[in-house]
Length: 179
Image (tube, rainbow, N blue to C red; front, side):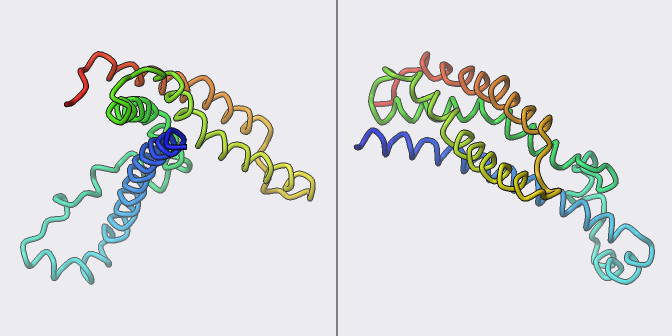
């Protein structure tokens, strides 16, 4: 029973890290949208003039950092979020095996931990998405995910996310356990 709770804790921890970074990307995107709004001359004169008189400069804000997430390029935010989520699989594999080693005082069974980390959350999410998509297709809704996009999500999971998780998992095996 304790072993199952440990794996659940590892998966929750790594996926919370994913969620926090995706939230940070969303905040940067919203800051960029706000910067575009305040960038027009009328808005600058009305809202930014008091701030500029206090010595604040617009180029010191965080909005120029997110120039690639322009609202004009449709789908850029979703693409950026998907890429960051997939790349964080390396950190998820590393973090779960490292934490497993610290709790168990041994890295025995690290492949099972890496597999659970790579499969539990995305697998449950994909199963729920599949069930909801079947219901949407059955009712004839236009909101259903197209078959090509659905299989591309499955391919991203199996061909990128799982191997990246397994590539990050052996990294802590070389380090000695903390005493």
